[in-house]
Each structure stands twice: as C-alpha cells, then as structure tokens.
Image (cartoon, rainbow, N blue to C red; front, side, top):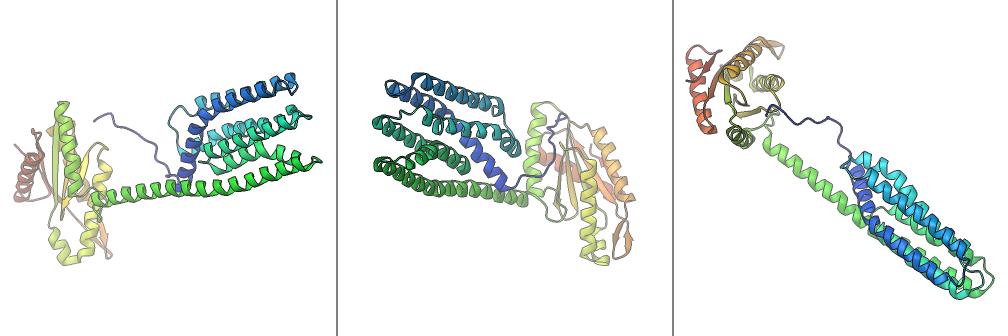
Length: 376
C-alpha cells in the first residue's frame, strides 16, 4: 500500500452541470448512427433528383455535406475517446455542436439552391425528405433539447419560409403543414426532454443521498473519523491485502488517560473537545493507507499496513508525545491529556491483533499511563 492512488481535490460539480454533461455525452453517442443515416438519405435524394435538378449543384451539396459529417466524426473520436469531467465534456462539445448545426444548415439551406424550381413533384419529395430528417434529428438529439431544436429548425425552417413566399395555394398549404409539424414536434421535444432531464437529475440526487448515507453510516459523528463498523470493514480488507502481498502489519490501540475524570470535573463538552482534538492529531500524523477509527468511548485504533513493530513503536511514541504536549482549551482552561498505547503485530487476524494490542495497552496503564507498550 506504499503506492497510493492520488487525486486532485476540487469542488464537486453541481447536479445541473453533471446532468448537462451526461445529456451531451448521450447526444454524441446517439449521433454516431445518425451520421451514416444522413449520408445514406443524401445519396438517395441525389439519386431521386438527378433527372430534375442541376447535377453539378447536387454533387457540390453532397460533397459539402459529406465533409461536415466527416468533421463531426473526427471531432467525436478526437475529443470523446477518454473519460472526462463534466466541465471538460461541455467545453469540448461546443465545436461538435457547432458542426452539427452546420450540417443541419447544409441540409436546410443547401437544398433550397438545388431543389428543382419547375417540378412540383420534386419539391414535394424534397420537403417530405426534410420533414423526415427533421423528425429523425429531433428524436436522435432529444437528449439535449437546445441542440435538437436548433438542428430541426435549421433543416426545416428555410424550406418552410420559401414555400410561404410562393404564389400558389399548394405551396402555401405545404408551408402550413410544415409549420404545424414544427409546432407539434417542438411541444413533443419539450415533454421528452423534460422527462429525460428529470430522470437524470433524480439519478444524481439518489446517488448523492446514498453516498451521504454511506458516510453517515461509517463516520463517527463526534470526531469525523471512521466509526467501529467502518474500522472493522476496512481493517479486514487491509489485513487480507497485507497477507496476500506478504507485507508486515501492525496495530496501535490507544486510550485517553483519566477520561472519566475529565467528564466528571469539567463536563461532557470538554470531554467531547478532548476526543475531537485527539482524533485530529491522529488524522494529521497518519498516512492515507492507514486505517483509523474510534472504537468506542475514548478508545482509538490504528491499523498500519507495511509497517514493522519497530516503526509502529516510533509512530506511537510520536503520537503519544504530541497528545501530551498539545493543550486543550475548554471553558477558558487549559487541559492536559495523555494516552496509553498498546502495539501488536505478527498476525493476519484482526481480532487477534486487537486482543494483543488491548493487553499491551492495559499493561501501559498498569505501569503508570502515558506510555507505550509493545506486545510480545
């Protein structure tokens, strides 16, 4: 356990940021199949309009669209191959979303320049394809509603506005139908997006509640260190680890001297301050790999992986001196506190180590307290 995992402490992102990042990741994942569908539909549209539209314009439109789809594919592979924080995901998603909207504009605006002006049949077919693509975009990108709406409007709105400016009723009727479709899909997108957002949000709330419950269940409320249950759970794991890897293992058992007298003379508030101060001293002096816990009352246990009895004795003496030399201020009085310490080693059974350390600790008390005894 010498090589410990390190992490950079930082502020946990708020739930809204985490939800946005998750929805953005989902949008990017869902858009991968959409890239190939978009290309396939574009090829089909070019084939269908080949005899009605300018072929050069169709090929230019298809080439520009293909480049935008390729750029989106490269961006997704470049930016989202590794695990990222929520903030990094949202930041790196901006160019991808911009290219997604650009692809949608190529569909919506680009087709206006290649759509046959003299063939109503081809115009109806083109509008039919645009409506289908817009519906597919809204369903595929529904995880992130702003992007879904922007992509859908980029595809369908240019053609709809163009139809409104045509002189005959048939074109205006097509425009009205497209407008109704836009309104209905916008409403549907809101309902779907709100439901998805609520589910993501609820998931994170439940996760946070579970983590907080786990912390409360494993933390001593007075000192902020592990409680007896957590000490034994983590301790058993640490014992098994040291046994598998043939590492020395030691345990320190510590008891505050004359603690009952502190409570009786100065009150339980001073007793609580004493335990809090001892817990803080122990936390400051121990490694991350060590397991520290309040085992009950004024008794503390420390499990030391990869630590020989001699090194455990050096650490215990340092802790004992630090506690004895640290005054505790309570009710404008300076209290001096000492501790009796027992050390045990040589076993890979936690109960055996605790029993041996407990015996050594009571030997320290019998010998006058404020001392450390190493078990035989």
